[in-house]
Length: 117
Figure 1 (cartoon, rainbow, N blue to C red):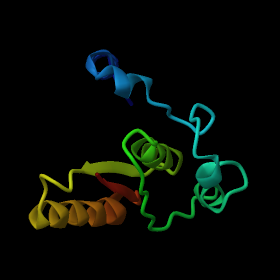
Figure 2 (tube, rainbow, N blue to C red; figure 1 turned 180 degrees about the horizontal axis):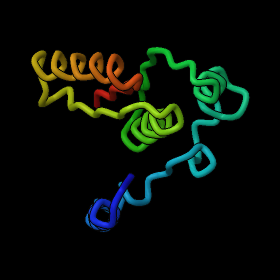
Figure 3 (cartoon, helix red, strand yellow; figure 1 turned 180 degrees about the vertical axis):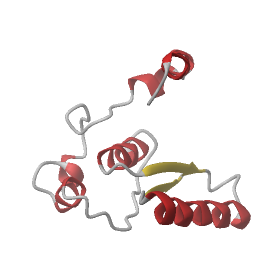
Figure 4 (spheres, one colour; figure 1 turned 90 degrees about the vertical axis):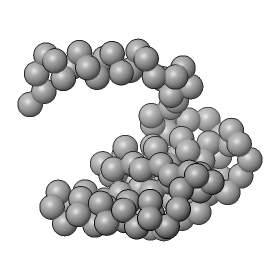
């Protein structure tokens, strides 16, 4: 159970987050575009709504919604979201993240959405 200090910390972090992060859609109801990929009735949307995640690669130009869709998927499936930079990260980082994801799944029953940007 969260106490008053946890709530205040979360509120303060929300206020200091970059504007783009604060305004980022958190559900498909708030997300516009990419209807062919994640619109109602699509295979991906069905898999997300039925909590049947599978490996997927999003490809597209900056600003097309790849990160936002990945974050929405993680939120809707109650999965941990981990973002990694392909430019500044190496094999050791990926190995660590995969190990942490395995532990999270084993001990907490939570899956991980790994987003490599």
